[in-house]
Each structure stands twice: as structure tokens, then as C-alpha cells.
Amino acid sequence: MLDNIRHLPQPPSLIVTSRLADESLWAEALNLGAWDVLAKPFDHTEVIRSVHSAWRHWHDRDELHTNRSKQAMTATAA
Image: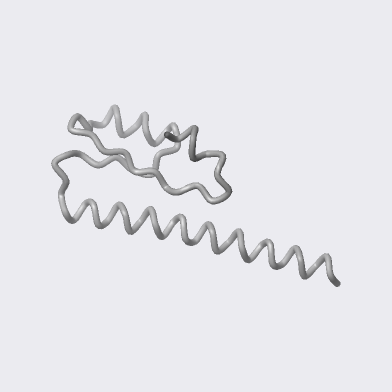
């Protein structure tokens, strides 16, 4: 999945889920580029925290990209 989304212009922050989530899976997933790993069955608080954090990261990254593009266009026009 990470290989498939990595090439997108604004790739989402991937959250991995597993019944067998442990420190080893968490470390491997994060090292490969996942945002977080959540164990099943889900803990409501952890899901909200992880999804909010992933969305915020994606949103801020997108906003930074947009602002840089605008600045580059302004600098080129000047």
C-alpha cells in the first residue's frame, strides 16, 4: 500500500491496523513510512488521536506545498 500511495502528489498518512499489532510491527511500519499502527479491536480514543494526527500532518504538508507553489509563482512573475 505504501508503494502505491508514495507516488501520489499529496499522499495520505497511512494508518496500519492489525489484530496482531505489536512493537515489532509498529517499528517496521513506521520505518517503511506508515503514519501509525492501531491494534484491533480498536480503542476509540486511540483511533481519534491517530486519525486526527494523520489528517493534521497531511493538511499541514498540503498547505505548506500550496504556499511554496504560490511563492514560487510570485517570484517568477516579479
